[in-house]
Image (tube, rainbow, N blue to C red; front, side, top):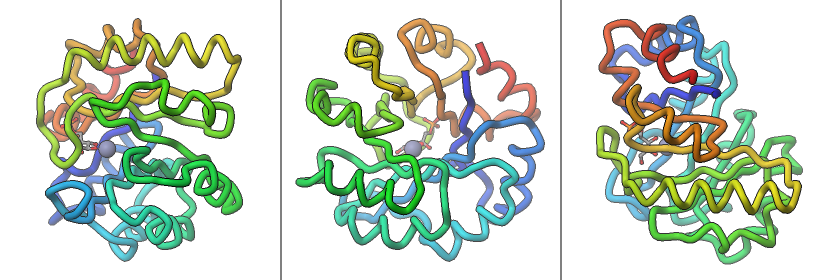
Length: 213
Ligand code: DX5
Ligand code: ZN
């Protein structure tokens, strides 16, 4: 299991220090939530701050766009060279085209599914992407509870991926903690995002290790 702490729950007054701390504590990716106040009822950070995060991070960035104008935001964030750049399928009329654009930047494209979105929506573009991010809470805020129907969705997606022989990682985002991580792993998840669970802990290394099931 790969672990991607979400810096949404970090202390933004000490962001540089927090990013260094999770990297030193052994995380695999640094999950960055970009919110525009339109697609979700919250706003976070733009490329100026994310480039400071990239500088502080000794691990690759995993950027999760929660925005209305994906094309515009891909142009803003692609120059920061994240490992993954993921956008919501609910907000994209031409996902196939956007995937190619992200790949042309040399970045691994990912697609995000909101809690109501069935995995079958992306069946015919599965072979084009490197990552599917399953939202297990409503996007916009950290510290919410895991939505149980996400487990069935992960299982169905796992089956679809295995049947197609696609090389796609499954990531889950929202309400993940040391108690439910085994369940999501058994359902077929490769990467867990955890915000509140990691950053509210007094020992980041211990919290990250406890998610590696
Ligand atoms: C929510 C974000 C998540 C969030 C997860 O919109 O996409 O990455 O930070 O936070 P926790 O792990 O606290 O649910
Ligand atoms: Zn996220």
